[in-house]
Length: 260
Ligand code: KIV
Image (cartoon, rainbow, N blue to C red; front, side, top):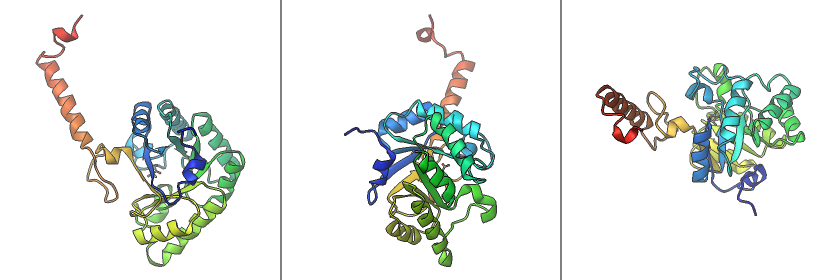
């Protein structure tokens, strides 16, 4: 059997541990792929991590297409999932199918969209495009949540579960659970037939997704509670650039070994 990850293989990993990380360009996708992650997500978090936007809302379909095609050129084995940006699927299923096809042509093997847009999910699935859902704190709804707040606390847990059930019934192969209490995530994971992939959702989902810049310490400011820095990337990179700048100023670089 081929080693290449597919949406049906991910769907069959219910009860397992799916590893997903975001990537937005060719070298980062190559590195994640070489390590053997299961899913590379070209998230619309490209907006805040890479493009200098405040949040994911301004990200356009053209920007997603640009980053998806770059990441696809670095991805050989992992399942490449692309986020559908805000405005590309909410109005109607036809919009979702048209935008989705553009992302697939750019190299995505599956798409992710936020919330129980069941007609959009069903339409994409009917068009042959695997869909990953996203529930809980869905960043494209940040204004209606009044900020990036944990969702599904207390009697709101059923709302998140219901959204997950609708998404699974519409044909999604997996669902991201973002910023929900660990107990609620465990219950949703138990009740849904498709794998749950957590971020800020405790240890009991069927997998985990993290943002490239967060785990590598490339984001400015304090780390989020739901992430862990495996590298102080910002420090390492600024130290390296500082060393380069001082060697250029002191004329110790380039040396004879760098000259022709
Ligand atoms: O855009 C993104 O990176 C995401 C993950 C946080 C799940 O949607």
